[in-house]
Image 1: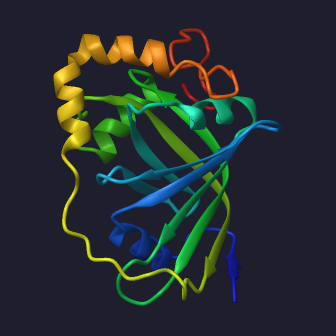
Image 2: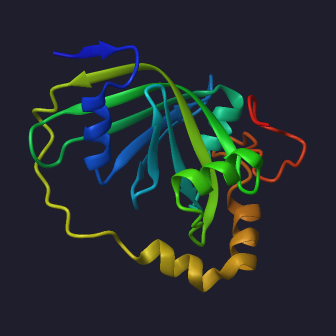
Length: 192
């Protein structure tokens, strides 16, 4: 039932843009596999072989540690309304640190220059395989709105409190791998 493509087709792009949530999966060569839900209109399609999402501060930073250690990343989208479909994007991910040239450029071009309080980094995926499958077993859900909880939490912390929280909770993975969040001399590959 699965169909594979070398890059995103226009129909895939349209499907992605209709979704309110997606999932990220990453792992290093050893240790735990991470799976995280993402939402809040944070993802942008940059082209047939590239997507990026604006990553907000959370309780961990597993994806950044795994990308630094291994680079593999998968994004998954599910149709929770309308015709069933699951779409997976496989490839290599790269973290664009907040304030870096790549981050600043994409913030301006893809997010209208608006950085939400709590923004931690961006994650860019260079896609090498797109897979579409049926999604027949995915239940139907109705979207009623985004949760305001994360924005309120970030507002209560303030910029200084968020920086302290990131230093405490976002510099190492569950398996002790470094995330590179505060490394000043570690420019991601391909970033100018």
